[in-house]
Image (cartoon, rainbow, N blue to C red; front, side, top):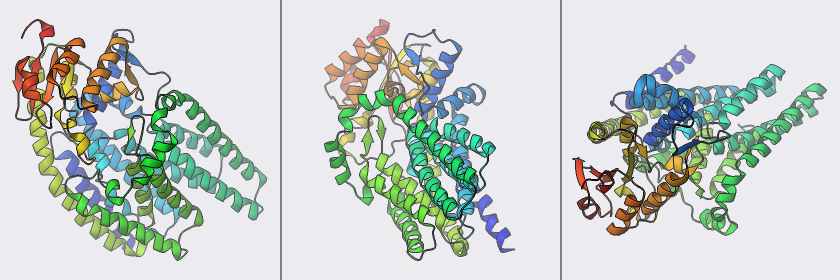
Length: 502
């Protein structure tokens, strides 16, 4: 009877989380529009590979591909709003399913409800869809690894390779974590087999898996060598030491929004304290203690940004806490369920009103897409960037909203951070790449000269500019040079002189 009652927590807690996703018309996230735009361009290129001289498919497919592939399939059928809701729903379901499977396989004494405390996290609202989905896939892949090592077979090994490949094409950082954890589990299993004088073929099986993992890691490093080479100035030893020295718990939680920053640090510290207490009392296997210590160690060691990858410390910290949440004691399940119920309800009560407000702001901006000419070059001047260097890192839900206008009007945006990065399935070509880089420099360097901004936009032959009226961007002076064709309290859409009109 107690077991049945414990399982009743799952539909209740899942329903609360899904309310935050499905009650608003559109689930607004920071990078969601970037993923949607990349997926739309990818679909166009796959249908007509040589139809556009502005974009090119990245070959071989990079690791951050899953959201693009699924988005390219979903957008024509369900539209952009439902596509992002489906991503969010998949994230929730896979995260919970993977966490429950892994916790139950590791030890029957673990509670299966700890993962719910971290479902509504900053990366969900940042719209880091590849990373979000990868966390659930990581748990599923590790659960299958535990099962595979318990009863090895060639069929299970093939399925393991399929899961590992899927995880690679979701997110490279999480895949690297998976290989590291897999190595711990593999070595521990090999030692156990040797000590118990088990069958030799099992030892051979473990060695073969380790060889495959090593070859995969070498191949991945080779495929991504050009990215490491391009960002060698950002991964030098002095920079790593400098960024590693500046670390505090508040920086780990700086990505939280919606008021959780006052509560979530205590929740995470409580989870870690409970798990470390269980480890001291020898209630955890040594190999899992090593996994947790390694994640925490790398969260402290790694720089917070390598190339275009950002918030690395916070992501590793999140993985460490999420992994710890799988080891909460089963006897506390009613208390854990009650705490998660209160925490999620509190989150949703803050999130849904904000989502409705952002929906209203985004809908007003998207309405302007109907008056834009199709297939024109667009760009954005997002005011949030001007002055962002003085702000602590956080989620900015409307920072890429202009790309939704580009999707609706089939415009060619020069302001896609993903396409510019080159680590997603699509990248800019030739003059478009040069123009996108110069426009990006306006934002990143926070260039505030109206003449410099106007000249850069004009040189890039941009027809439409979406301006966010926030931050230190001198938008009144910039907009005065062009023709305003649509305006909302937050945004302004202007037509430049490229179209031959003022």
